[in-house]
Structures are given as C-alpha cells and as structure tokens.
Length: 366
Image 1: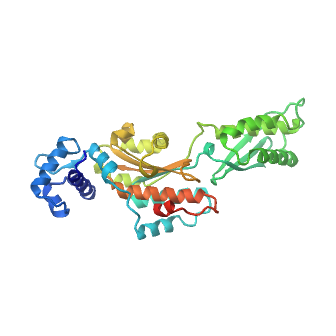
Image 2: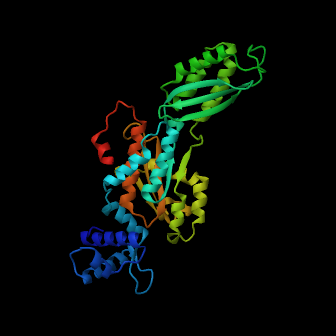
Image 3: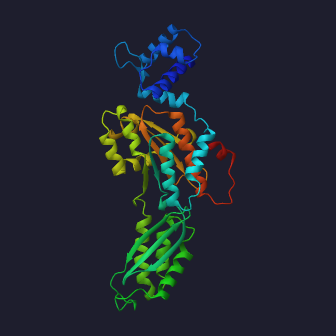
C-alpha cells in the first residue's frame, strides 16, 4: 500500500490503540490527530484498510484495531526509530555506568532494558566460540583436579573443572593421588597462553593437537585433559547463557494475550529465546535490528508476541551476541526500537578497545 494518507491513518490507529488499548473510531482520529481531511474521508480510508487486512473491527459498531499485517506495515513503512530524550539518556547512564566486568554489565543492561521498555528483556552473553581468547589460567584443586579459567577479549570469564585420568607409569610420572606439581602447572599454562591468546574458537583444536606433540610426557596428561575441556567449552553447540529481566512486565500485559502460560514456559526454558537470536543474526532489518511480529516468530508460544532484537559486538557490523525485548503486539515500536538500539550501542562500546573513539553513528545511537 503506497497511499500516504492511508498510511497516516494507519499510523494514528496504531499509535492510539497502543496508548489506550481501546478500539479506535474515526471520531477519535479526527479529534486527536491532525490528518487534514474530513471524518468521512477518514471513514473511507479505514474501510479500505480493513478490506486490505491492516485493521479489523473486533465488535459490531466498535472502532478498529491493528492486525498483525497492520503492525508489520507500520514498522516497515511508518515507524521511525526516534532519538532518545535527555531523561532517557540520563536513565541509561545512571543504570549502566560503573560496571567493571561483563557479568555486572550484562546484569545492569538487562534490568535497564526492561525498565526502559516496560517489556521482558533478554541479553545474550557473548558466545565463547565467537570471541577471542585473552588469557587461560590453571589452578590446582584437589588431587587429580584442576580449575581451568577461560578469559575472552569481551571480558567473559568461564570456569571449568578438569579431572585428570589415572596416570600410567609408562607414559608419565605425574602423580594421580597428589595435586599437580606447580612447575608442571606453570609450564602447561605458559604453553597454552603462548599458543592460544588472540585466537578464536575455530583455531584452537588444531593448535592444541600440534602442541601436544611438543610437550614432555609429564605435561601431556595435564595438557590432554585441559584440551578436552577447552574444546568442549568452545564447541559450536556449547550452551549459551542468557540474562532475563522484566517477567513481571508480561503479567501487566495479560489482557493482550489469550494465554500467558506458554510464553512464560518458553522464557524459562530459554531454548526458544536462543533460537530467536539465531534467526536475528541471519535476518537483520533496519538499523541492524529485527522486529518479528506474531506468527513471524514461527513458534506457538510467541504467536501473540512481538520481539525486537539487535546484535552487539566489539567492532561495528560484527555481532557476537544479541539482546532484545519481548512484549505484546500492541507495543510502542518506535520507542522500543530506540531503547534496544541504544543499549546495544552501549554494550558494543563496553566491549570495544578503550583506544577506539566513538563514531558519529555511535553518537546517533544514543
């Protein structure tokens, strides 16, 4: 539909319905919006929009409400990501400034996003397999056990407990019943960091295989056990982590859902959310964001919901994780999209090297 006037009428209907949750009539449009045409013309435009499936009349003699198709047209052709107001910028700064590590920053971010949008907010931690290794640490625990600490360039810290297999005298003198000797631990740690720092997950396995052929028998038992755990942590299907906040916001939107149970179950299980982020990385839309509405989510649990997602990462155009919000299709799309974009920019700047200056585009993102 290319009629500018009807697009304005649709925009007014969406805006009014989002604000009031009441069907919108032609009289309300005439009184509240300066559309520059007569009530009769507005009624004709509403009839055309209804015939084309963009709005519907839920009850006889009632006003109209947007359909999923109407929301889609609104987002694609009418909605514009509005700049954040000074109070909104101040709110983000107050909520997010001061985070010292990735765990704290993600926790603050997901809470801020839920407060800014009034929706359920989800933030994905940077995937280990998409980040670069910055440091590996080995700490002796009980006999036969070592703590592997993986630190990435994004600040993510992952800890894995490594259990050494029983030692065989013909292969090693490393005692299985005692803690790993500090000298062995230090040599293996130094070799791992020298070989792997600055590499991504896909490069790790072949480098470790080559390294195993270069070490002494005493080191090989430890290196092999650490290798198995490290490769497992970096495998493509390794478990990803999500932070969720604002579940109570969904409860306030109960009238917009015929049943909230399936959606809450999907949020708790997180599998559906991870799938959404995967789809988001494959199908970016305006401004690096993706807006999926109702049945576009391709999951029954989200059939009455809208999802706004964006990627973030240390370099522009290189998303290593995602964040987003989930709410009813009766959503303030321009404001929600603005908040999602601004918070994604913040996280990207947190992950960026300190020497990088904020670009003009980053400034606009705020």
